[in-house]
Each structure stands twice: as C-alpha cells, then as structure tokens.
Image 1: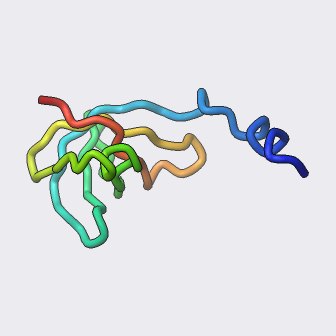
Image 2 (image 1 turned 90 degrees about the vertical axis):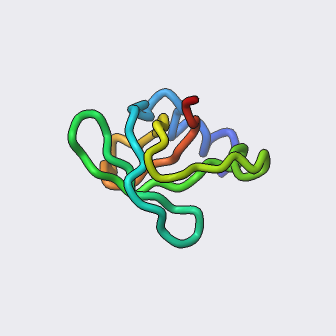
Length: 81
C-alpha cells in the first residue's frame, strides 16, 4: 500500500475543532482540558507547538482537535492570548 493510499483513508477534515481550558498538567506534555461543551479530555501538544517552545499553563484557553472516533483524546493546536 502506498503512502498516498493511506492518506486517502483518513482525511484531515474529519477532525473536530473545539475550544477549552487547561485544568491540569500531566507528564510528557499532556494536559487535562475541559471543553466548552462540558467534556473533559486528555490532550497533548502538537509537534509545531513543541518545536516553537510554546508553553501551556493551567487556566490557558486552547483550541483542541479531536478525532470523531475517540472523544476522550485530543491534540492542542493553538494557545489563545
């Protein structure tokens, strides 16, 4: 199976983009985030935020991308100012 065939199976548009607030810092750059809709998810930092050394602290408002298949895990893609 080629690399292009794998990318066709999981398009980027299938992610859910939600806003939330960081509640707790966990090991390995992982965070507990309370979303605006009431869910609490475990989220990790995306690679670009790690490369740019963007710090996320408790109480920060963040944008989280989630897969519609697993609503307990997410990826922090943006820290709001």
